[in-house]
Length: 212
Image (cartoon, rainbow, N blue to C red):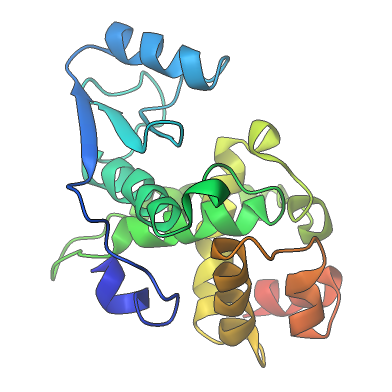
């Protein structure tokens, strides 16, 4: 489904070998694997290890805020597919636009939902509750966060934001989003590239998004 939706638009290359996924039956085993790659994130239920090109997932759910297993798989395998589509020397976490790298993976969590399924409901409802309390991270701040500072609340916010951008909620927003992702896959991203393509600042995007 990811290739159907974005394969041509992002010039994705299907890996020559099967995609590797390690399934951990117990969270203790999963946490040990996670600690080697990203210490201090024991609440995660899945992760992508760019050093080996492998997705790790726990079938034992996290104690709090657990998403459906299929959402975790879709999210991390999106990172895997995008990363393995790049030249080997470019693989690994992005230096800029971390919000977009995570946002496209959050967006992909619902790809493949059949009629009546709603994999994104939990994230959507959590963000709606936070928004009602005024707990929305300003986009000018969100756009500067690195992977270690992204929290669960940011991922929920990214679901709403990416739906807006990829749905052409603003002029050029879909093209700017995909063009920035393509540049990231080529190793050509620079910190201000997305906003330059949008031709507006983060506050303007935020106002349009929240008003939509």
